[in-house]
Structures are given as structure tokens and as C-alpha cells.
Image (cartoon, rainbow, N blue to C red):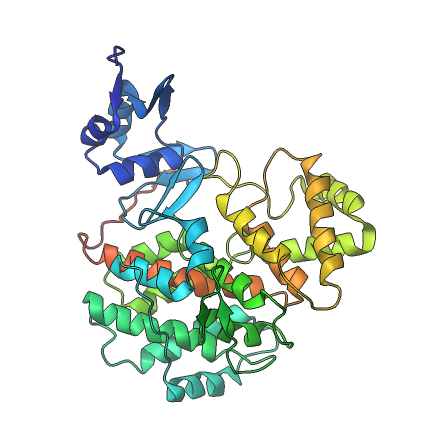
Length: 413
């Protein structure tokens, strides 16, 4: 490399004082520019840009706010591909159960976690849920499950990795098993892409809480695919909330509670519900009329665009393939066609690509699940990632997220 203005990844990481995974996290969030040279597959970086960034220590304003980059060994995004501890997330999602993805995040090994809840704790959650108001959402049931489970764990303040994994395994199971049953409380078997049968997979137990009917062919597989794809995704808003809580040495239950609060907003974990509403509107008015009307009214389409991908969200097609492979229920084929029609109408009118929320909404729509199913799948899935980030944060210096404001109010007197 003759151009001395450019440096390789190792030198770029040294200049910034970070590890290479953190450097590539900066790249994926648009904080650092990566350059390619013809005939060379290596990544190159401008020394001046690195030195300027170094003066700001990892923060740089963006068009949509303030970006914060931190080091992690959990997930990375490179060339619009998502990796979980170096494993391609799309390949993982169809090859293993969500239990194994959680194990990978928590232990670095693809060892399946056993999600087992206390029957007494689940009974306590169901009893407390009777006091929820009529406007309660499924995510409110999940938050209640977290609170009840925390109150019954005498070791909740033990932040050693083995203790955190024990608590998190039981918590995820409680969040699912204590949800209101719409179909059957019995779990359904998961059949992976290679024909492997997982008898008591979390995805099979979750189905009966999201749909009143038995799963069609490929239904449990589709939910498992969504769970695996959504388990972690860099430093999303809810994950940042989890790490901030963990930096104060909040216990795993409090970490998940903080993350759930951030996830519950309409611009994060509940976005798939807007996609379902888009499909419902298109079923009445037609895809072209609906897409044109939404763009004229809102200037955007739900389930389109993602700030960390230059092109297409790699999770989208993996999940859409699982949706395309679904069997019934009655009307599923027509609903699949409508999803395709909406996507085709959008392709002619918007420059953004569909994201994983579009695919998650398509799963809910085609499978005929309750409209809240998408945010529930998202929350259950991401709990594994939140806990993994908390475990990383417990190893860092405490209280390191201390921001400063820029005062814009009246002059002090």
C-alpha cells in the first residue's frame, strides 16, 4: 500500500485504542469510513479521520442523533452481513434452535440452554396478571413476569456468569410459559432445516401463546427462525438501555426490565404491528393504493429502511423464506401473495429496502397470529442478547455511561 494516508485495520484499531471488532462496529454505524483498493480484499482507513475521531473518543453526531460505539464480542455487522460470535446469523437461524443461539451468546459455545420455569413462579405471574387492565398488551405480561420472577429469586444480586445464566434461563422460560394461552399450553416440536427434531423447543411453546390454532407446516420453524435472527443486533436502543442498567450493577431482571421499557416504543420492538396494519389495509384497498396512500400521508412505509445497513437487512430474506414455506391456515396462500404485492408496490416507489420488521409482520399476518405476536417474539428473542450484553458490561468499569448535556435553556440568574 503506497498511500501513506491509509492504514490497515490493525493500525486503525491501535490509533483509536480499541479492538478490531469495535473498529468494525464503528464502520457499520457510519462512524468510520472503510476504503477498498482494487485487487485487495483488505480494509483500509484514513489516518486523518481516525485521529479526528480519536479526539472525540468514539462519539460523533449523525443526522439522526448521537452515535455511541462500544466494544463487544457478541455480534458484528460487516458488508451488510450479521454475525453472532463469528457465525453467520442467517445460517444459524435455520440450522439450530434458539436455545443454541442463546448458549452461544452466553457461553461462546453452541450448547443449547435448557429453558425451564418454576411452576410456582408461573402460577404467581398468572395470578398477578388478573389485575392487569383491559388495555394490557402482551409486553405488559412479559414485564410482569420479569418483576414476579425477580421477587422470588434470592440470588438475583449474584452477578457471576453461572448465576446470571441460571437466572436468565429460568426467566426466559417464565416469560413464555406464563403468557396467556390462546391455543394449547402443550409445546409443539421444532423441525430444523436438516430434519432434526427438537421436542420441547421454546418456539413450540410460544406458538400456543400467539395463535389459537395448531401451527401449520413450518410454523414452529418460522418462529424459531425469527427468535434466532432477533437474539442480538449490535447496540440497538433497548440493548443500550440494558448496558446502562448493567453498568450500575443492576441485576439481570432489572436489566431486562429496563430493556423491555425501551423496546415497547412504536419505533423499536413494536414496529411489526404497523406492518400488519399495512397488510390489513392492503387486503381491503389493494397494495398499490395502500402503498401510495401511506407514502403520501406519512412519507414512509413501516418495515422499510435500517440505519446500520447500506443495502438490505440480511435477516429479512431469511425470515421471509420461512414465511414462504408455511403451510395453512386457510387463506395463508392469499396472504402470502399480498405480502409479495405490497413489496412489489413499494419497490417501485421507495428507495429503502424492507427490514426484519417487515418480515416479522409478514410472519404474523400469514400465520394468522395475534397482532401483538411480533413484539412478543422480538422481546423474548432479544432477552438472550440483553443478558449477554449485561454479562459483558459486568466486566467493565461500573457507571461508565455518564453523559453530559448541552444546556439550551434560559440564562441562569
